[in-house]
Length: 201
Image 1 (cartoon, rainbow, N blue to C red):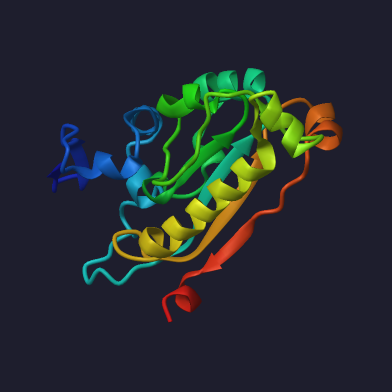
Image 2 (cartoon, rainbow, N blue to C red):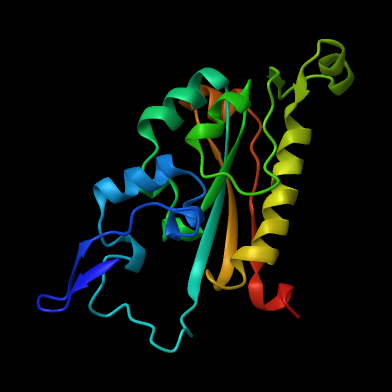
C-alpha cells in the first residue's frame, strides 16, 4: 500500500496477492465490493485517529453472520443486495455462512469462515428429521448447529487472536425472506456471544 505523506492519504492499494491483506477478506467478491465503496474501511473511516503504532488495539466486537432462509430468497440477496451493513464493523474480521436450499451455490458470494457447512440438497426446516432424510433433504436444524459450532471454534481460534484481536465475537443468525416467512414460517434462531478474554483463559 503506497501512502502520500503530504496529504496523508493512500495513493494506491497493493494488488491482491496470496500473501496480502485480501486473504483476510475470505473472498475477493466482498473485498472488491468494499474497495469500491470505501477506501478507508480498513480503519473504520478514521485514518487520522485510527493509529496503532504499538499494535495493542483490539476490536470491541467482531461478527459472524449465518444467513438462513429459502434458497430463492438467499441467492438474490447475497448476489445483489449484500451490503457492508450486513456484516457490521471491520470487514477484515467479519465472516458469514448460509443455511438454505442448495447453499453450495452461494459459496462464491460469501466471506466464508473455515468449517462453514453448505449443502447441495434442498433444506427442510420443519417437520420430521427422518422424513427429511428419506426425501434426501438436509435438516435445517443440523446445518444451523454445525455452522454455529464451526463459527464458535473459528471465533476462539482466530478472531480472538491476532490480527483481529476481537474482545467479543457475536454470532448472529439472520433470516432472509419475506416478513411472513421470517416471522411465521421459518424457525427463529438465537445467536450467541463469545467473550474472547474468557475463552482464552
